[in-house]
Image (cartoon, rainbow, N blue to C red; front, side, top):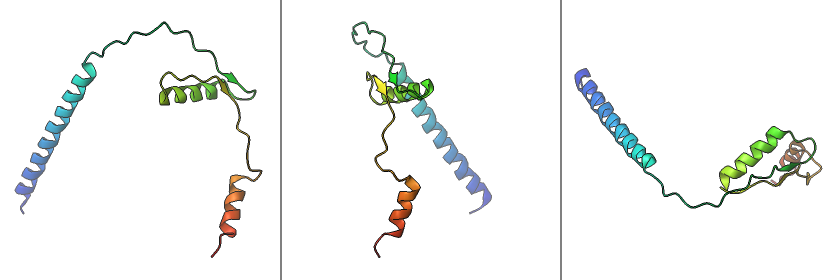
Length: 104
């Protein structure tokens, strides 16, 4: 295959790709611009501030509350507390124990 044929194939491929991207952009743009039916909502009360255990920064509580709200729309965080460690060993100690006591 000569250079001219390769360049022609490359140009045709880019043209097809460009047309496909433009078509997708137009389709997604029209989907986003379509008006959504407004659902009747009762007036919402202000969400209560989550209660945080002492020592947990406000930024951490805000990040946790935002993550919960993203995962479950309409959910709210009422309290944030530290999880109690179930195992007295550290993660590295447990990994070493499992690695060295694994059966053959």
